[in-house]
Image (cartoon, rainbow, N blue to C red; front, top):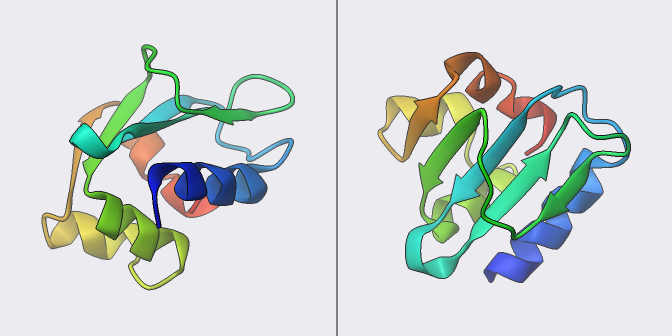
Amino acid sequence: MDIQACTESLRAKVGASSGLDAILKFDCGAEGLVYIDGRSLPNSVSNENQDTDCTIGITLENLTAMGKGELEPTTAFMMDKLKVSGDMSVALKLKRVV
C-alpha cells in the first residue's frame, strides 16, 4: 500500500469525529506522512506537514499492517516498530484511528 492508500484508509476510519481530540501525524520518512487533525469538526486527514501534538515515526509497511489490523499499536511500540515524539497520551489513543 502506498502513502495515498494509507491516507484514504485512515480518512475512512477517522470519519467526521474520531474522539481523538488531538493532532497527530504518522511520519514514514521518505515515503511521506499522514496528518490527522482530530480537533477540527469534521476531523480531517491529509498529507500536509504541520505541527502536531504527537508524531509517530513508523515505516509505511508497519503503518499498512496497523491499518489492516495485522499489527496492534501497543505491540508495535513494544517491539520498537514505531517511535513516539510529543504527547504520549495522544499515542495511547491510536486504536481510535487505526
